[in-house]
Structure formats: structure tokens, C-alpha cells
Amino acid sequence: MPFHNLGPALFPFEVLIDTCCSLSIIYIVIPLYRLLSRTLITTNTHAKLLKMAPSATYDYEEHAGRALEEISDAIDEVNVLKDKAKKRSQLPPAYDEASQFDAAKDKTQFRQYETACDRVRNFYREQHEKQTVAYNLAARARFNSPSRARPELTVWEAMERLDALVDDSDPDTELGQIQHLLQSAEAIRRDGKPRWMQLTGLIHDLGKLMLFFDGAEGQWDVVGDTFPVGCAFDERIIYHDTFAGNPDSRDPVYSSKFGIYEKGCGLDNVMLSWGHDEYLYHVVREQSTLPPEALAMIRYHSFYPWHKEGAYTELMEDKDWEMLKAVRAFNPYDLYSKSDGLPSIEELKVSLLTFHGCSGLG
Image (cartoon, rainbow, N blue to C red; front, top):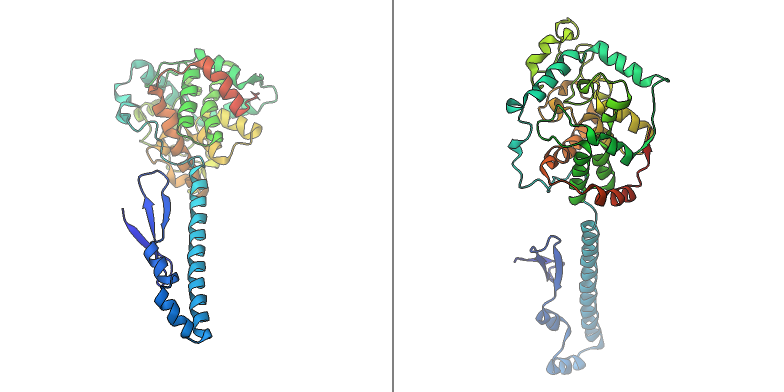
């Protein structure tokens, strides 16, 4: 292992960096022979010094004292650096650090729409034909209506209600939604990510409750990949050919590149296809203190044409690039956790709800 000289050239000392540990531990090594050569006086030298003028003896003692002080100061500085490094090592990983739980997984086995079953293909045909501008305006008007039913459920009650729902759009799992939510939250927890991100993983699909309470017309307006309406349907959307049955694909405005939007208008001003992402985003934005990154994870986690394929970047404004980073950090926990073992629902119930302090949604 290499030694590196630090400190003044007159009083060098070495720092040994132990790279075998996750936290580099710094050891101060002050070679004894150097210290002795600077501070100890042999008997003969001492006798000679006694014969010297008092000022010469004083100068030597002052020089040796300064040397020891400089060494002591250098040690203090390195110890301060060690303390800071230790504190940094005790912090949880940043939310956007690369995921670790999926390191050994074959990611090519996910989202295989070319070989998906008829259930998945039929779902997307219906979704692509019916998600029009007119429908999306009506869905948002219904959501904002004072007469809309607003049932109150705890987070766990909401998750249990979703247990019977199998997502017709998902080629990667046929599990109920409560297992998927627990898989996501547990994967985030195992990677040591912040608590707010663990909570986001736990609730990110609760918007699918709209299938039971919000007048949804079927799974096609609840689940599945999302995309902007009011502008051209990008070719990077899965099963793009099925948009031929959507009347907006023949509208001269809605089928143009930017349609009803302007370049750089920002995704806050873009109408995404109505579904559980948009639904929960609007609920949580009003009822929680989750950070903007969490809200982006909820709103855009199904917007695969954007966060995976790179479509619609012309509509983005500056802040959307930070939100894109957040969504991409979240995506592995949403997608690749689906192949994990089945979680024990009862074992996790108390610990999760106690840890996150979850209450209700309404």
C-alpha cells in the first residue's frame, strides 16, 4: 500500500491509507528516527551546547518546540478529516445512487412485449384507441368535481383493497398489487435509501384504487404505460401501431409534433394519459409533505417513453431534467423487484406502518 508525504518538507510524516475497508482509515505514522533526530541531544552535543552562548541554546530549543507543535497540529487536522469521513459513512446512500439489490439480475427478461400474452396486447390496443384529448379532459373534470366520492382509507387498507387486482398491462407479474408494493418498498429499504423514498415505493401504485372508486371505465384508464395526449404519439411507445384506431392520430393539431404544446413548455403543463399515476400524484401533492422528487417518481414512473426511451425531451424545461434523474433512480425498484420472493405480508405490516407513520388517504 502506498505512502504519501504530507505536511511541511522540514518535518514530513506519512499517511497510510487502508483501501481494504469501505471507509478508508487513515493512520498517522511518525517515524521515530526522525523525531529523535530533531528533538534528542546526545551527551556530547549537550556538553558542547553548554559551552555555547545562551542565545544559541535558546534558538535550538525553540526550533525543536515548533517542530513538535507542527506535528501535533498536522495530526489534529488529519483526525478532523477522519471524523468527517466517518460521519459521511454513517449517512444513508443518496436517493439517486445506483441500485444494488438487482446487481445479479438479468434485466433483459423484463418488459418483453414482443412475446407478451394476448391479455397484455389486447389491453394496450384498447388503451391506445381510447386515450384521447376529449376523454382526458372529461376524466380530469370528474376528478376535480365536488361530487366525486372521496372514501377515506388507511394506507394498509388501500393496499389490501388492491390485493385482488392483477394488472392486465404488466407482462412481468401476475401477483396482486400488495405484493408488488411490498417488494418495491423492501428493495428500497435493503439498499438503505432515504425513508421518503421507501414510503414512495410503498404507495406509488395506490392510485389504482380509482378502478374501484372513481368511475373508471376499465383497466385501460387506470394502468399501463403513460404518454402525452394532444400531440403526436411518439413511435417509441410500445405497440405504437395500435394508435391507428385513436381519432386524435388523424387530427391535424393533435397529430403534429408539438400539438397543443410549445417546445420547452415543461412537463407540468403536459397532459399525460389519465391513469393511476396522475390520480395519485394529484392526491399526494395535496395531502403530503413528500419532496418534489417523490412526486415525480409517482407521476412519471409509468412514463416509459420518456424515462427509458428518451422521447418527448423537447417538451422539457430545466427542472424536468432533475425530475428525470429521480424517476430513473426509482425505476429499478418498481421494475426489477417483481422477480423477488414473495414478501410476508403480516410480518411487514407492523414494521412498515410504524416506521413510516402512515395514516390515511382520502
